[in-house]
Structure formats: C-alpha cells, structure tokens
Amino acid sequence: MGARKKISAEKRKEAKKSKSMAVLNDCPTSPRKMRLVVDLIRGVEVNKALGILKFSSKEAAKRVEKLLLSAIANWQAKNGGQRIEDTNLVVKEAFVDSARMLKRLRPAPQGRGYRVRKRSNHVTLVLDSAVLQENSN
Image (cartoon, rainbow, N blue to C red; front, side, top):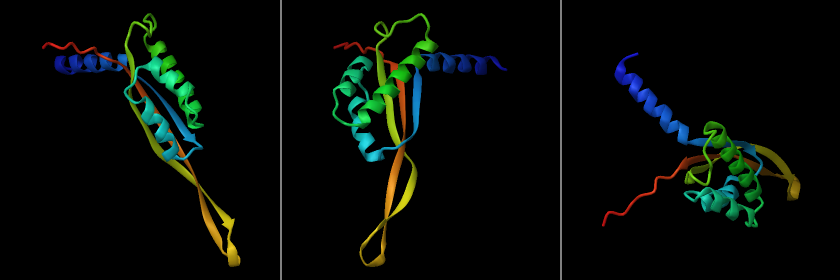
C-alpha cells in the first residue's frame, strides 16, 4: 500500500470512529407515519431527541426511541472511554425507506375484492459528534 493511500485510509478510519449507526428493518408501520417522527429528531442533540421521543404521542416514537438507544450503545462500544455528555452527540442522519408490502384482499360490494396494502419500512439513524462552530465576527 502506498503512503498516500495509507494516510487517506487512516483519515477515513478516524472519521468513522466518531460516527455510529443503527438500522431497524421491516418495521410494520407505514413509512409516511414513521417519517413524521424521524423528522422531529433529525439534527437534534441526542439527549434532547430522547426527550422528544419519550413524550411524543405517536406509536412510531417508541420504536425510534429504542433504535436511538441502540445507536447510542453502538457509539459507546466504539468509543469505550468517552462519555456522551462530554462529546456533543447529534443525530446527523435519519431516514426512512419503504420495505416490503404485504398485499391482502378485502371483500367489496358486488363480489369484488379491494386490495389492501400493508406497508412496512426501514429506519436508519446515524449519530456523529457535532463540531461547535465559533463565530468570528
């Protein structure tokens, strides 16, 4: 391996160390309902995001809260000695993708059948330590 390649690989490794992620696959909630909850915590500091999710009345908030706790645990496993309070952890990325759709038939008038689509989704959370920007005005 060349020197330049090695240096850039070490930089990528250090950048990955501050990041951690958690993925929730095949969650049986419609993606639209889940996005309403995930939009609340995107870009928010981790402790504040946990508070938002805890007091949210949405059903999907419980699942996202559990996922956020998993992402925090993943971050702690990567950075053994550091405390969350000292590093300014932020929900850097949070997105919802649609997953498989279960298709069912519901009886309808005059012998017809209406299709019912039971949607599910994949949720991904990425945590990163926020860099405090100093205003030099």
